[in-house]
Amino acid sequence: MSVEAPTVTPVQLGGPRGGPAVRTLRTDNWWVQPTISVVVLTAFVVYSTWAVFVNKDYYVGAAAHRDLISPFYSPCITGSCVAGARGTFFVLTWWHITPAVLILGGPLGFRLTCYYYRRAYYRGFWQSPPACGVGDAHTKYTGETRFPLILQNVHRYFFLLGLVFNTILTIDAVMAFRLPGDGTFGVSIGTLVLVANAALLWMYSLSCHAARHLCGGGVRSFSTHPVRYRIWKFLTPLNARHMQLAWISLLFVALTDLYVRLVSAGVFNDPKIF
Ligand code: FES
Image (cartoon, rainbow, N blue to C red):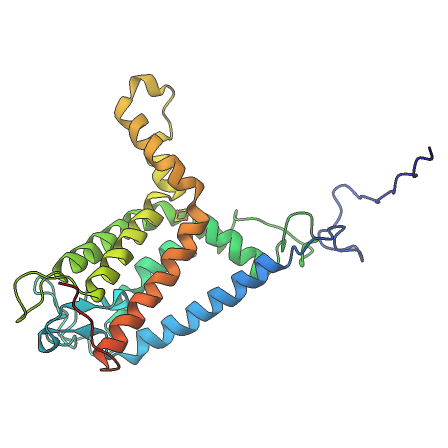
């Protein structure tokens, strides 16, 4: 039996990144994942930018016997918010452009600094590197040790801010069970959409690496921290699905906005279930 001579791949230790003419020896479709990331993230950014600046059709109110608000506009805290959408605790009466701009920073910062999304957009947009075992598109690598990428370290604080937004969207979902002028309690498709959106956002947040670190980080022995151990046991399987939850919750936020928008614009009525 003849034995094939091994192929030799020249490697220069400590050499420049991404230099060689042969970018990768991989023969599988490694480019599919980064391409999907680019397409979906670009589509989301385009849609959400439009939804934020269009500044209308973000609320379905009492006239339609509903209380449905788009997640892009909640909490609505400016004097320019449409009647019914505005909260009463805190109102910026002097703010006249789209109210969504004011709250955009929280969810955006949380997603942008997410460990998973970093991987997705570093690979997809920055090609650094595009996939495991594929040459970097850049010759230098400085990681996240200096400005501006060192700012990614604020993710743990955005995680806490994200919990505040989740709480607000959960309250919105609960309020959506009131069908004003159509009984004191009821369920419509819109109600379920808001509930599903809030639930997915909680699952995404609780699957965050910062959440898992918060309950398990620094603990030397779980046997002396039974409560933290139970929380850690609950969060760990979620954490293993962080990537999936990141995509599903992202798409569902956009779908929730679209649903509220179409009902508000009168394209169709929100069907009542009971
Ligand atoms: S790591 Fe993705 S949300 Fe925290």
